[in-house]
Amino acid sequence: MRELVEKDRKITVVPADFKCANKGKIIEVEPRFFTIELEYEPKGIMRHNYCEFYTQTTHGTLYFDSYAETIEGNRIKVANPAKHRFLQRRQYTRIKYVYDLDLNGDSVAHKITTLDISAGGMKFRTNENINIEGRYSIVLPLSEEQSVECFFVPIRIEKNENGGYTLSGRFEYNDSKDRMTLIQYCAKRSIEIRNK
Image 1 (cartoon, one colour):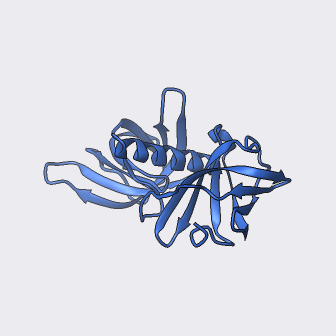
Image 2 (spheres, helix red, strand yellow; image 1 turned 90 degrees about the vertical axis):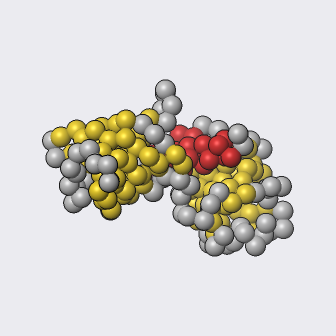
């Protein structure tokens, strides 16, 4: 595990209350612990309560559960986890996500059917002609109680043989907590799908 958790690597911490998600940098690595300097006050992170951790490595996105042994200001000392897993090689976990949604922009609500999403962006089908130079707002439902609002910026458009278009592009966020929420949602769904 020590070769995977490296000093100066950025890391995301998601406690049980995902609204308290935080991020920071690993500043020290010891045989049994590593220390993170968080960007924000560690609300929702409690000693000996398990959190989810996500970090990018050369092998892909590393995911594990662990807990804070000590909390001093914005610094938390975290126990090295017993187990870890790589979610995938791409930066963000991509999952199948099929919904009929509205893509809002240019004073028009475009009807789309999503195909897949990640915290980085999404792919969808539509019968409408969408301006690839535009920037569109969208609300992504994650559950009955939870959704994420962000902007979609098209990168690629393909004309389908049977009519309509397939577009893919990236997300932009007003609040980094929305990105963290989507990272957590996609990671959990990916694990659920794999364990079916």
